Length: 360
Length: 263
Ligand SMILES: Nc1ncnc2c1ncn2[C@@H]1O[C@H](COP(=O)(O)OP(=O)(O)OP(=O)(O)O)[C@@H](O)[C@H]1O
Ligand SMILES: [Mg+2]
Image: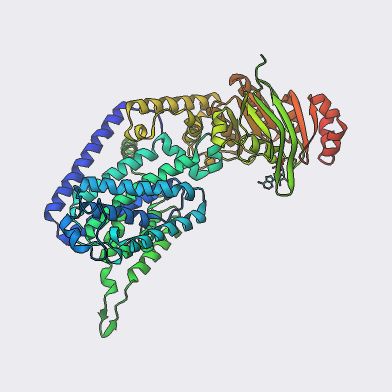
C-alpha cells in the first residue's frame, strides 16, 4: 500500500528491521557452527525452496502468469553454475562422451560470479522465450511453458559437449551447504521481489493480473510488465537451481523434471498467491515436514502386523494437506497478506489501548 | 491554421466475421464538447469505443487524436495520447484499493526506472510520494477520499462508477469516453451523475463522448448527439432535432423513446 509517510514510525521500523536481521544473522552463524550436516542440509534445502517459491509467486501469484517452466529455468541455472564452478581437472575427468566445449573447458569462476551468471542465463532464456509465449493466456501459457521446460531437458540430454548428456555433472563444489549462502540468497530474493511488488511497477503487475485489458487501457504496457515479472522470476529460479546443484553436487537432466515445478507450485498455492511471507514460511514448513514424514514411507510394525514400505506416501499426505488448506483457506495460509512491522505495531497499539480501556 | 480536432473518426468500419458491427462511422469532437452516442442494444456503440481505444483494430477507417493518427495503436499508447475511458460493465481492479486503482492510472507519467524503484532511490521515493499525494487529491476532488484504502470491489455500485472515472482522470486525458455511466441508477442518482459529468468536464478541461441509454441524461447534458442503429449512423445533430427525427423514433420504437422525448 502506497500511503502517507510517518517519519517517527519509519525510524522505528528501520530499527526493528536491523534488529530482526541481526537476530537472523546470529541464528545462521550459530546454525552453521552447531547443527548436524543432516539438519543443515534440510535448512539449506528450505532456503532454496523459499527462493524458488518466492520467484514463482512473482510470476504466478502477483502477475497472474500461469507458468509451469520453473524446473526448466532451474536446470539452466544449475548447469551454468556447475560448469562455471567445477575445477578444470574434474571437468576433464567427467566428460567422457565428448570433450567439454570452450570456454567452459578452461574457466573456473568464484561461486558468486557463477551464481550471478546462472541467474542471468536463466533470465535471458526467459526473455527470449517470453516474447512468443507471454502472448498466450491462462492454461495455454501453462502448457507452452511446461513444454519449454521439457525441451530444456531433452536438449540437456543431447548436447554432451556441454551437459555431459544423461551422465550429468558430478562433484559440483558444494558452497551452498553453508547457511550464509542459501539464506543470504533468500534475503536478496525477498528484498528485490518485495521492493518490486510494493513499488508503482508492482501495482501495475497486480493490475495486469486483475484485468489486463483494463490495465492496458489505463496506459499500462502489459507485455513489458509481464516480461519484467517473467524475467526477474526466472532469474531467481536460475539462482535457486544453481544453489540446488551445488547442494546436491550431482545433476543430470532427470533432476529437473516436472515434479520439481509441482512441489514449488504446492508451496506457493498453500502459502498464498501474492504473499511472499507465505511462500517463505511454507517453504520451511514443507521442507521440514517432508523430512519428518520420511519414516511413514518405511515399513513398520503395529504389534504383529507388518506394513510394507510405500514409496511416495509422503506426496499423498501433502496432496491431502493441500486439499484441506484450499478447502478451509481458499486463498492459501496467508491469503495475499504480508508480514510487516506496521501490522505488528498496530496490533501492539490496539492491545495496549484495549488494556488501558479496561483499567479506566 | 485551424486547431486539430481533439478526436476525429473517419469512415470507421468494424466487422466481426460476417457481422458488421459499425459501418462508415464519422465523428469529430472539438475541444471542450460534450457529445452523446446513442442507439438501441447491439447498435455498435461500445464497438466504437473499443476501436478508438485500440482494443480492436478497425476493418477500415481511421482514428486521430489532436491531429495524430492513432489507428491501430496499442491501447496503452492510445492512453498516452490523451484518451481515457470507462467501461459499460465496471472493470476496476477489484482486490486493489481505490487509491491503488487510481495510481495505476497515474502510473503512465512515472519517470523513474525499474532499478530505481527496486532500490528505492531518493528520486523514486519522491516521485512515489508525490504520486500518492496527487492521487489522494484527485480522490478528494471527486468526493471519494474516504474510500482510498478500501478494496475497490467492495464499494457500492454507484461509487465504483465514480472510481472508474477517477482512474481514467488520473491518466490526465484530453478526451474522456464514458460507456453508459448511468446504467443501473435511479433517476435521482442519474441527476447527480449528470452534474458530476459536467463538473468534471469543466474542472479537468475535458472533451467528453458519452454513451447512454437514459434519455433524460443524454438530452439534458449533451450538446450534440449521434445515433447508431445496426452499425449505421441514422442521425446526428442537436438534441431537439434528434428528438424530432423520424428514423430515430422508429429505431427506438418499443423502447419508449417517444414517452421519454415527450417529457
Ligand atoms: N468481440 C466481438 N466479437 C464478435 N461480435 C462482437 C464483438 N464485440 C461486439 N460484437 C457484436 O457487435 C455488435 C455491436 O455490439 P456493441 O457492444 O458495440 O453494441 P452496443 O451498442 O454497445 O450495445 P449495448 O447497448 O447493448 O451495450 C453486437 O451485435 C455484438 O454482438
Ligand atoms: Mg455497449
